[in-house]
Length: 176
Image 1 (cartoon, rainbow, N blue to C red):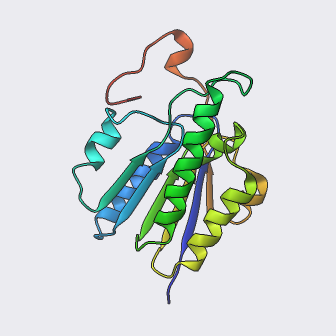
Image 2: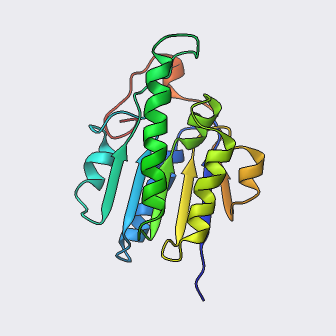
């Protein structure tokens, strides 16, 4: 049988992207072809991207501009336009022959009004209509309930405590 999996990692805690990348590593063990698309995030000089670039089976698109200003600020428009560009790249990827597609921070893009619920639903439909793709993973805070209902597996990462609260900067190998 041809099974598919749709996973969501959501919540306010640290580790959603890390969990998704753990699934990428597991899939690499089975020679899967993988695409990682990141909304919001803008840096490629972080440990997970540096490592994944060593695998030719992994396509990576870092499609954000970083911290999103409030909608009323002029810079917001650049983030909106970049999110739409990343969205179109994602639709193209979902129509190709990848075994696993990870769409990182998509729910953050939604909660910041960079994407609509209808756009996210369209991406999910592309996944279910592509016979080649075995797994779709979406991450980000505040996953909408209607999307959670469509997923096979949903994990919520809860923050109990974080070093940032105490003024500790991001550390290579941990937060970057």
